[in-house]
Length: 84
Image (tube, rainbow, N blue to C red; front, side, top):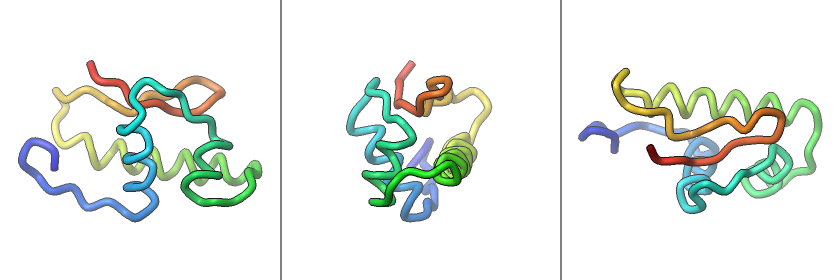
């Protein structure tokens, strides 16, 4: 729920968000996300899958332009959750 709104997430989006929010400020590499969420070996195309799911997750969580983006990119490495 964001600002009183229920946000529908796919299973993968929920798993990514849960992993990030339960481990604030910890950086998860693309490889780690593939292993923990998809339970598969990492491939080049896996990075695109991770990026697409995180992009969709960010879009869904951004219910208001004045809210910060909590899912941060760590250039060339992966993602982390960070509160402002």
